[in-house]
Image (cartoon, rainbow, N blue to C red):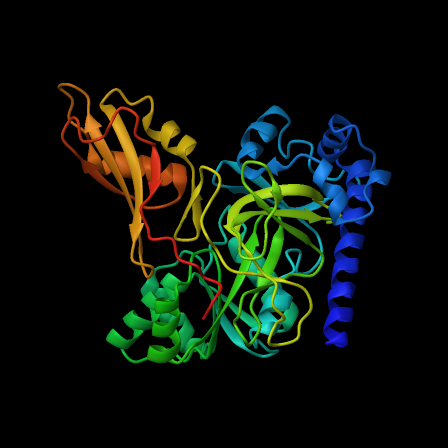
Length: 413
């Protein structure tokens, strides 16, 4: 018991140190952080630990597009001392994301090692390498661990299966839904793949889907939680009993509305503070809902764990590992004279996501469904199903984007 208390104290002390360091560095090098501190009547010296962060307003991820449009490309959030960047990405929102130089910029090696990935493993990475950073986030972590990477990206399912077979891939990184698709298609077309382990992220992993992957296909599946802005935030160890907070970040869980710290088990927004030298963050609201699990970890790792994904606070909805925002639908459809009303609906059963856009035609207009689908896909990077519905089906006050999926906690096995 004393050892557990000492470990908890050490973890809390480390979180306090990271919070103070992030604010001190950000106040000197990030115009955005310096401005928020000034607006709160604070200086960096006022923050000695996590509790002192509460006086600083939260910056919501949904505010980034406006912030960046006013001061492109990063809204004053890039550290002026960061030096040259390796890459600049454009995520849905739209949001610009920087990548600094150096190995494993997003710190994914921690999650991969906890999931059992080892030097010499051959791993199919199915995240996109195009414009959005997902592919390179996992790629950098895999190479830091010593794995050989097959950059599957957005290649056709058949091509990825053939590449994994030819290389003898034993590992997978990507969304859990696409992993199921690969495994099912492979069995239908020449025999099973040899995946032994997988690190999945970017989409919910309900217990039913984990059971299908682990029991039906004998793939040992682990989860990671991350964002392009923040890097790795949480990961599972072998017990698969919640997400351990990743090194080098401070995580708060705040109840929406009053931003008070959430009690154990109470849902709240995940808010991140990070002393990243390139892109420091102070109280960055991810828009994701989770909860704390404060019971001691079965694996004796210190600190509380996140209970999994419990929904969203902001307007964005994650579909097939990508965020879709109402403003992107508005940009694609809002000025179309043939469209009177529209509504995006995300549905699914936990194993498959379906993105449907219902459209009411303007009086006398004929809607080009294929043309609309192509335009929407270009805007949101997700292939939609466009359905023309009769006038009156979509209410005048309907939200432009709704998530009709059952909310599933993903932090338990």
